[in-house]
Length: 197
Image 1: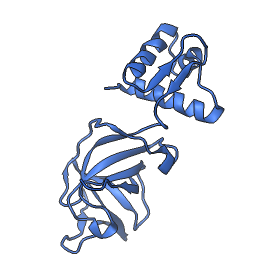
Image 2 (image 1 turned 45 degrees about the horizontal axis):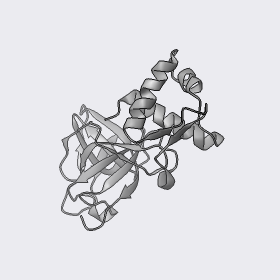
Image 3 (image 1 turned 90 degrees about the horizontal axis):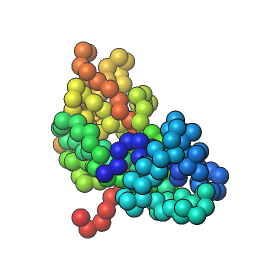
Image 4 (image 1 turned 60 degrees about the horizontal axis):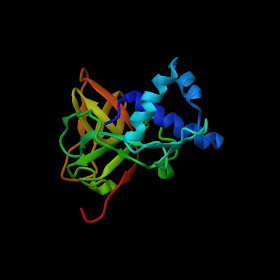
């Protein structure tokens, strides 16, 4: 499993290659991450190579090539689409979805449990792709944190009152009472569903 620094270096290599048409040198990677030793950079490149994320040629200075199509969106856990559940935040793989969603900077994925958003086309087992941000327009589908519980719902405001509204008539809106610890984690930008699960 990659650590945060290795994942950041992989994303940098992919972004650099996409933007310039050629990969960075070891020295350029070191400068971007304030790693003064080339051996320090080689350590992370070795981790990425062992994990199957990179191919390297030691014979040329720009001999770093990625094996993935683009930066990956980390899967950080699961989110309720029913009653709120305890929010989980642990790295659980990655989705290679740059071709679908563009630049993955600030994106993350959550796997849905429950059926409270079925009328919005979000089913149990789907992955919702979320752009991390702390504000939302009324009507947006958000991932919200209530205390330590996360849920995916429509965000609605009525004056100062906030409601999290399901897309299933079997469920009632969740009012966000004054004094409740509440935070928007991000806006749902898309859904990925596998067939035959």
